[in-house]
Length: 330
View 1 (tube, helix red, strand yellow):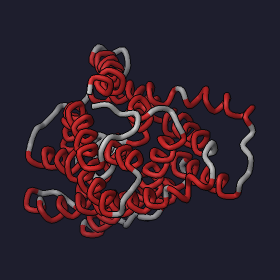
View 2 (spheres, rainbow, N blue to C red; view 1 turned 180 degrees about the vertical axis):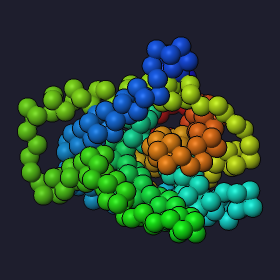
View 3 (tube, rainbow, N blue to C red; view 1 turned 30 degrees about the horizontal axis):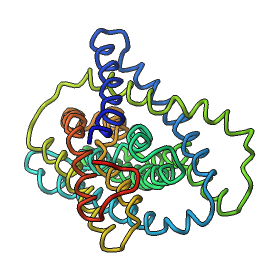
View 4 (cartoon, helix red, strand yellow; view 1 turned 45 degrees about the horizontal axis):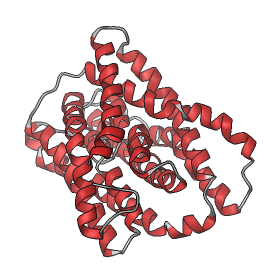
């Protein structure tokens, strides 16, 4: 417990707090945070995912078939659960299909790209297995979840525009745009590289490692700036999002992993990944489309605070279920 708090949670809090204070003082603005996020999503994170995966071998990929299938099925099931709960459960409160899609993009997805390495590496070590968990969950979130969420969001906006006599926007344009982003195709390219068996030149790694080093610190700092501009509005819609993200998703991943007898270490990493705060990328999309911003950002802010408790809690629960996890003491 002490190791996890001191080496995984406290550094994130310190860096995020620094970003938050700089945002409150006006040293950095929300526009700066968007620029930092762009560096992370377009350069640092794709580099981190690519160079980490190409260090793996085909046997590791075969071993992680269960991890891939469980990640895809459970995370997307939780994603659609969030969508339908908000679409139909809060319809009388004025929640639209586009709003429900935003909540799915936020609370139906872990912020694996921004906090995956920052949280998992201090707990489980810097190794190819951590990179594979981050990459697989990242592929699900970025190459499946975001396109699905955008298609639902744009379908909702298209229906609303049609009802008002406006022109229907092309719902597939933002989906194609999402798949074109480096954070979506870089891990897929790396997996293909490993499957084909092309040797990775060691001299190329330092260049990738240099840009990869900016990933966690810049992402967490930018998150602090973003949260500094958020007026937290605690309501049942925001609280339900927290429950779905911090409790339902990791619980579903744990149960699925136990049923299909996943490797204990991989299961622990997957559960912690599933318990990460809501996806910051969803907040970026909410802001871009001006849809459900206040509730989704409030849910994110509450989740970031409560993650300090839920991260060690889920590791403890996982160890109760599978026994001692190598390298973890809690």
